[in-house]
Length: 219
Figure (cartoon, helix red, strand yellow):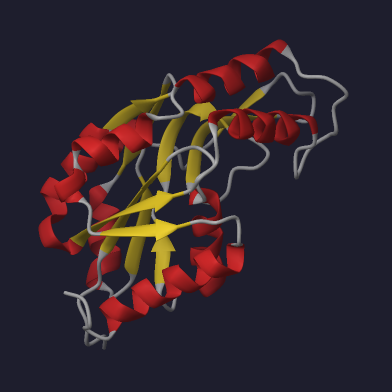
């Protein structure tokens, strides 16, 4: 039996702010502390998608044939939003189930309406966190270019495709979106984590935050 109140951590951060590293931290720490909330999305699966994304389909080895994902259920999600022209959804029933079993939940949210919907549904059980980084728009653009040219789990490219350029420019255009959400909803946020390009430091901040709620230091 758990003797603390499990929480839903809603994470907001600009592109390149360290959200991916925070997700890695949650996975590294393991389900003893928290699990990532899966999101259903209308797009195809990318090679670097983790367990967080339940995509509509993925491409077969031929690179053309779409294979439908049997776990995908965007229509069954009660919280939906759009980001970079792609639809996303979350099933709050699954979150409630995990919380009842004493497992804290972590969800990355990049839309103000979705953030307010989740905060409205979970009330004080929802802890809103902003991840801050000093990365600039141009630094983010260059990072995205390198990620597309040298994907972690894909084939190295000599140049960007048209689709790659469209993908990058969509994200660069909305670079300040998360910061604006933070400014417009300042009183909604409970904590700010600082990502200074040191993964181990971010891991430490996340671990300390979870432990503070587990031990009742924060309520």
